[in-house]
Amino acid sequence: MEVEALLVALDEAIDNKKIYQEKRLAHADSIERDLEKCPPKLYVKKCQELFEALNDFDGKRSLDALHLIEKNSLFQEDAQLRTWVRLNQARVYATIGLYHRADAIIDAIDPKRLTAEERLNYYHTCRCVYEKIADYISDENVVQEEENKMISYFDSILALQPAGIGRDITLANKEIYLNNPKKALEIAKRSQKKAKGKEHLYLYSALADIYGQLNDRPNQLYYLAQTSLEDIKNGTTEYTALPHLISALYEERDIDRAYRYLICAMEDANFYPARNLAMEVTNNFPLINHAYDVRQAYLVHAEKMKRNSLYITFIMLSLAICVVFYLGWHHYNAQTEKKRADELQKALEQAEIADRIKTVFIQNMRHEIRTPLNAIMGFAQLMSNDLTPEERELYNGYIQESNNQLLTTLDDIIDVSNMEVGTFNFNFEDVNVDDLCTYAMENLHELLPSGVEYNYEPMQAGLTLYTDRKRVGQVLNNLLSNACKYTTEGFIKLSVAHTIVNDCIYFVVTDTGKGVPADKAEVIFDHFEKLDHYSPGLGLGLYVCRLIARALGGDIYLDTSYTGGARFVFTVPKRHQTPAMPSKTDSKKP
Image 1 (tube, rainbow, N blue to C red):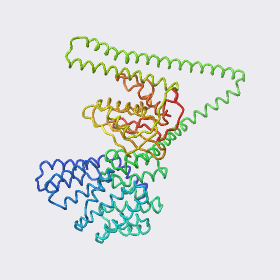
Image 2 (cartoon, rainbow, N blue to C red):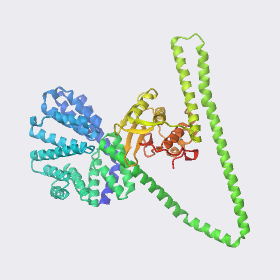
Image 3 (tube, rainbow, N blue to C red):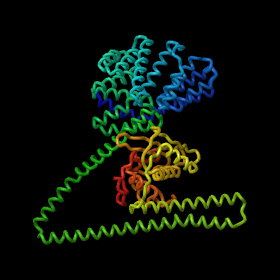
Image 4 (tube, rainbow, N blue to C red):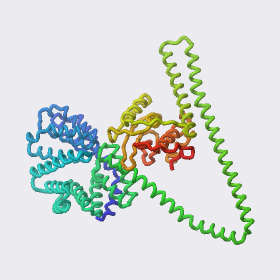
């Protein structure tokens, strides 16, 4: 099959991805229901089937299935079962990025006490775990140590494996690891005709790595697409080949496919927190998203130019005829009058806009200040009556809530005024990102609706940045409070990642609320703009957030590719570079 035909098949598979994943989920749910009425003798076997159904699909539920086996009495009696559980726990922990826990499990197992089959599984697991760990090691001494470990694991596996396809695949992977692609290719080609079932997937993955080392792009694309196609059809959410295929397509300038596959990977990176996949998505997203936007803008512009070429030609001919027939003085007079009319029209439009903004401001101020003041006055008057302690405490709460609402309104107005005239001050310092995000999450915990999950997922621990702690916290507080306001079920998640490309920290707030219409993606960042006229506030929150973000050298925008609710992306440079203060005209994203 040619590469293009294979990519077309992959496009179709991605369209049907939900079907494959739902089938797999239905199978796992069926096994889980069978556990409730399963005889004790078959319980552990059913739990193992549940794990196999969830492995590389849902990390949390995979660990839950293993935990069910640990609670069974057979776990303490059967040494082989304990080894099986521990090895699979190590695999899952390594996949989701808990490397220390995976390493601890591996170190706690003595291979000398295992059977030949268990030792083979043990060394396979060790190789997989340390292959993932090695990607995040920077110390040269540690790297050499881990490379020696990997080679010893390959040798141990080869010593235990009988002759056949499995041994050839292991041998080919060892040669790939040792950077001997020609020798690895010879072994893989020899085994390709004999492979069956899942052996094809392992061979495709090995061949993709081999041709990548040989810089043979067509064959690399072919086998990356083959491996990705098999992964999609298996319903997996932990991809090994898809991120590399995305990078290769981007380098080949197939931007549309690279962007589409990246969105596919982003969806599943959120579902199954595989660290390798999440990091690949984080690194690829800014470049590919920008290239996709540029390409789409170019296509729209080209289509518009093509459609209007006839009209432009006609207008130019008309103007040429006018120049020939009309006297210079008449032409000059017409142009002068036109210029005056345009200036008057522009002045009129600006006056109408200013009047409209003033009217909206006064209407909002009248409501947003009068409402809490009326509440404060009313409940303060009630406090003079003879009240029970419970009523007094309740009225005190209402007064405090109205007071906070009034202070927030006045703070927003003062912030906008200061930033637009350039008198807004910043206090820059080194800030721990984890502490900042944890405080922001805890500060708004009381606003969280009942039944909504609320969590913080750092993609890289220990990040610090040099910025204004208060203003970054103000932006996070606004985004999280908006998420709490519009989310009634599902989850609210704060994610943080660091991109090396532009040395920026990305704060991403994702919720499953009612979302923002695509045509409002930029409008919501204007002053006095709200999604509806019934929600409280002046509509200054996101406007202030964008002013702060750009004053800090970053930006804030709505990710319109996410359709499960709303996803806001707030970027801040890791090291602050003093920019010019934003003005009113700069408040919109270019």
